[in-house]
Length: 94
Figure (cartoon, rainbow, N blue to C red):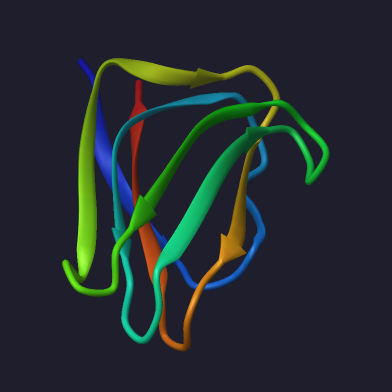
């Protein structure tokens, strides 16, 4: 049995310090377009996925089937963002 649990962040950094899978993401742009990169490992790790929320549209939501796999840990990079922008991630847990 698996379930998803959500985590919300507003700045770059390690979100989960272990291997995992991501089943969904929502990027919220508040005052400017927000570009987010999901990396496997640290800040210099490979980009597994990236997406941009347009400020005019407010947010971008995506589901991943099959889930995105991270072999080391999940690092979120806010490549560009406005004040109060954020990202919510759904982790798949065993």
